[in-house]
Each structure stands twice: as C-alpha cells, then as structure tokens.
Image 1 (cartoon, helix red, strand yellow):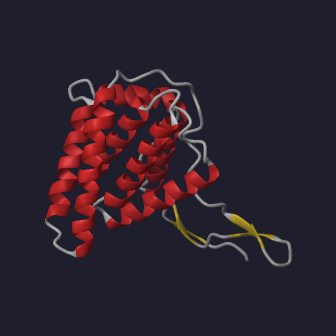
Image 2: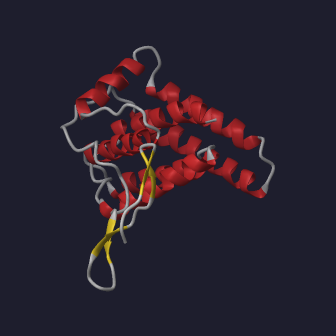
Length: 202
C-alpha cells in the first residue's frame, strides 16, 4: 500500500505547494489548510497517516507562517518528505535545486495534474472498499479533495517555478530534550534509531 500511496501522494503534495500563490490571500491559505488536513486524514497506510499527521502538527506549531508564500509551503513539503525518507533510510535530496530537478524529471512525461488525478482516484477506490463508518467518512473527505483539486489547484497549474534555497534537511520532530523538575536538560529519546538501539541517561 505504501508503494502506491507514497509516490503519488508525495507528488500531489509537492505539486500543490509549487502552484500555491507567491502572495496568498486569506482565502488561499484557508483552501491550502483544508487540503492539507484532508491529505493527512485520507492517507491509506495507517502508520504513514499517523506519522504524516505528527509531522504536520509539529511543523504547523513551530512554523505557523508556512502558508504565507509558495517558498515556505514548498519547504514544508520537501522537509516533510525528507523526514519520512530519513525514517525509512532512503536517500534524501540535500538542496531545493536538487528537489526541483527531481520533480522536473518526474513530470517530463506525466504532468503534476495527472499525478494528482491518479492519487485522488486511487484514494477514492481504496476508501470506497471500506464500508465501515470511518471508511465512509474518509471517502467523503476524498471527494472534498477532488472538489478542491478541480476548482482550485488545476486552474492554477503552472510550470515548476524557481525557488530560493532553504533548509530541507533538518527533520521535523519534537525536541529530543526537555528540562526536568530539577532544571536539568535530559533526553526524551529511548529506542531504535538508524537500526541501532540507542539508550540515553535520564
């Protein structure tokens, strides 16, 4: 399932960030926020959904202005994708220009609009098979995404724009340290990382 939702899902996220206005209105921000909320809610892989929603919530909290421009929205998409790639031990692009080159190559034969359509069609079919209450709710959320895509994103389709360089490498995660009741900085992390068990002192 992740092999299906992943490539199409990421292409959808990157595509909408790159056709987002450079100077968005409040309406544009509301549409993007709604689409991102729906994007997180409709991911077909349960673990991937949970991880993406955590990433998104952390990023929104620490970067509340990220929908103030195309540049900032795109940086979120690149950092989120790299955060997941780090978790999966996959290669990570190290620069914005490398990300844009990769996306240009991927869309040489298939447009961003076609990737979005394929992803939304996949989601509709996937959640259409789930007859539970949650499945029915999620199917309606996918229909909302389709409406936003058809009425908002698709009419704004543009060639992949140039962007400034920015941080796309730093993982989106909660702070790995905290201050305990004695005022001492301690680690929050105990567990596996990079395939190795990492134990830290409390």
